[in-house]
Length: 361
Image (cartoon, rainbow, N blue to C red; front, side):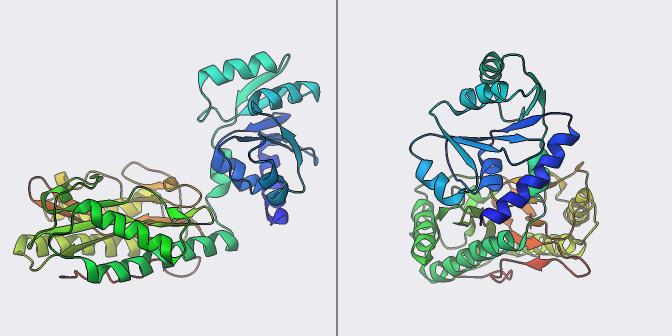
């Protein structure tokens, strides 16, 4: 889709010009992919403020892919991509070069300035990340496919969940099933937390076996064409105690409250506050400490962030997760998470579809 990436680069060039730079050096991997189509562990883009002179640099491992996915770009092959582009910027007469300060180390910046003789550098900020906030139709379809793969995998795994299965075995089963259904790979390290481990939001799966009476939280997602799904479901094994039902219903209610206000123009902090108030009113303020959600796309956690103190408005075609939780130390926890897309003139649209009712297996 070279034309899509060319259109993105034109929008990015406007930001380069507005920053007062002659060109920008784009080094964050997801941003390079967003602007060029190339997925690489070693690629960077020299983007002029105007014109068609964008230069993509990568090493010999990725030149074939670069020619395939970015055939309209000039290509420089070099192992040391930033040094190559810095030298090229100086050769082209660039006097002010913007760079992604949030991604570049001090050591790399020192080398950059040494190579770009006579070139002044200035922080570019997270301007490309801001462009990535609003997804185009192709991006939303990739996200939708990733979410459908995640839902389908869970549907196949649920009948196989039983006492005696370890957290690690269940996590592996989820990952394997997503792969069989067509996922590139898991979007992140799958979380499975059973019993008391459910009180740890990002618990790493262990050999602990699932047991009757456990709540089991599964946080996972499929990767499709570079786009990340992220969903969480909590299920019960065998039976449900009153306290487990209570916190499950509370988390479900909090998610419903957050989703209800998720619309074009809402403040990010408002979505978090509305859901958080439900949990706080039930006396569990201390048991919900993380943010309500985050954006998803070429990264599993990207802007916007839905959390206390967060600012900025959500707009049409911005996908986010809504994932309240309650975590009781020594007992267990519940988290329910879905991916939704903010939609102008309508309620947010769910991309994940697995039931949010408590399943007792």
